[in-house]
Length: 90
Image (cartoon, rainbow, N blue to C red; front, side):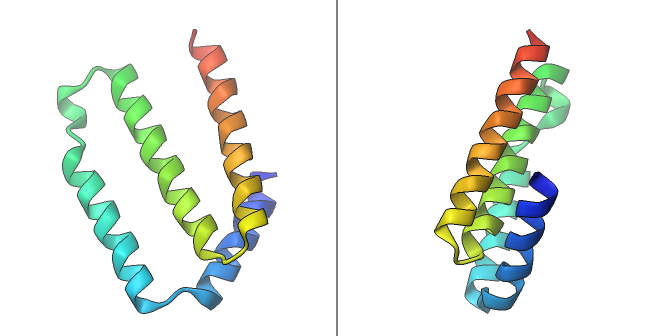
């Protein structure tokens, strides 16, 4: 489901996104990367932070698609992924 939804969102975002939006996304990613100190974290903690950053990035792209409904579906799907991975981690 993620492949279908996120692929469509990325295609729409590529058509609709503006240069300032792209710059904002790049700036956010750079900021998040600077904040991450994965070497100083335990593996489980680093994985959690990485997962959260990855989810944030996918939601930014989904919202850039211009389709609120599509972005909502992607967010719900990502929440399901988090729920399933949390279940197996514990």
